[in-house]
Image 1 (cartoon, rainbow, N blue to C red):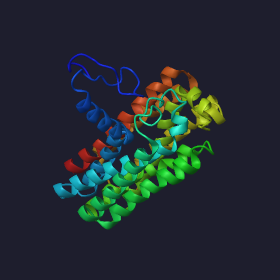
Image 2 (tube, rainbow, N blue to C red):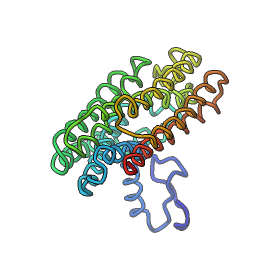
Image 3 (cartoon, one colour):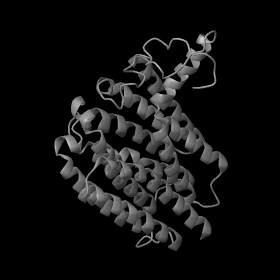
Length: 318
């Protein structure tokens, strides 16, 4: 951070330049830095996108009728659940994080937090999320949220990630659970539109992550993680990205026809967003480059955000 006075020596095992400690304020800043490290375990940037799909789904499920308290408890519980899963992920992946350029500065590989601290944090935050969801929302949303933690940690991180190039396809189901949680939180049950939202996020995950993997293939190869570009090559990965882009576009249309859950406002927005997604995926396929893959990855984040916002706009207008 800047504007906090002269910089002293960094915290032991903390890479130089990641957090300055002004002279005379070392203890206070170490507390803040440690808090920052625990926050890093939760992967807040990833959580933000999950919260968007959760909160918007609640409004889609029950426009004008979602209680503010329910919304707050759902988003808080969802934040803690995702944070718990991510902390467990960093605990289990601490060996490969240490050798990957993208992750080597995380709290555990640098020694800023011990594996035991990360594990304890993941357990505590996970239990708190269950209490909040069960007590402040409802049992179904609590069960779904907990299932998301278990699936991400056990099925994806522990079982699939190091064993199969289909890791992100199957494991992507964990990231698709937030819409189910949001729907259950809003109305107390699930319905076909909720399943469609799950499928949309499920199909979005592989091209989103594979686009990133194309730019980080050396990292994954060094760590021995069989991501698709490592195990099958760039060409196959690019083809899979395009196929999933087409499947994703088809899935987004089901909310208009045959489910009739959303109207013309959503249809126009989804068609526009889908067209650009498919075009960028086609560019990755036919004109492969790190730039093209990076553009698709960046757009995929905006795509999912805008798609769910369009759902809310359609429901509120209708």
